[in-house]
Length: 203
Image (cartoon, rainbow, N blue to C red; front, side):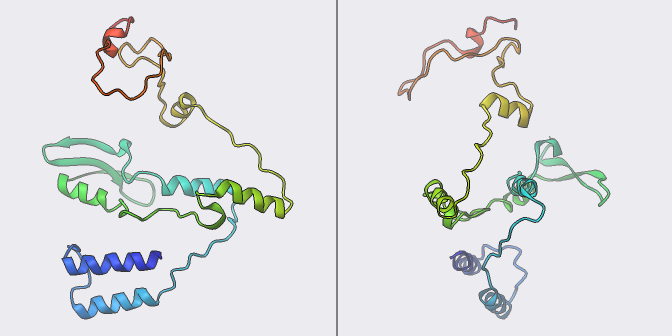
């Protein structure tokens, strides 16, 4: 299925001229590329990670990270973007300044087309029935139930991941936010006090 969708999108992009930097310039080269892609075996081979679950978590962090982290963006000067990039294999850094449209183009190269997933879960791990099927598989294999997963509340998660205290008042930076009332969807614009007006702390 993945190969069929990819090849269909590739053919459509070739016909519409959407591939501005297509290395295959002639129709013969495009036909040879298409034939090679059809001949290639796209079946994913998976095996038990030799380095253990920790390596799997590191890989998931890698696949789900952003294309350009906020710490690498240094500023905008006119129509140009300044960012920090790797200078060598030893960990050195250098500052690169590129045009804004080129920066956006490079960033969009990391965005998958609609219908594509970075990691596909099928079979026992299909989202629709993962819990039920995994329980059945454990029962048939006479395996113990998994250990309960560690849960994080929103405050602890944001504190660990982003070093943010989300229950701190963003206006005075001193008071603590607390839940007063849960409101459903509102049709009209709220007439209540603004966050700044409601804050009783110092400015």
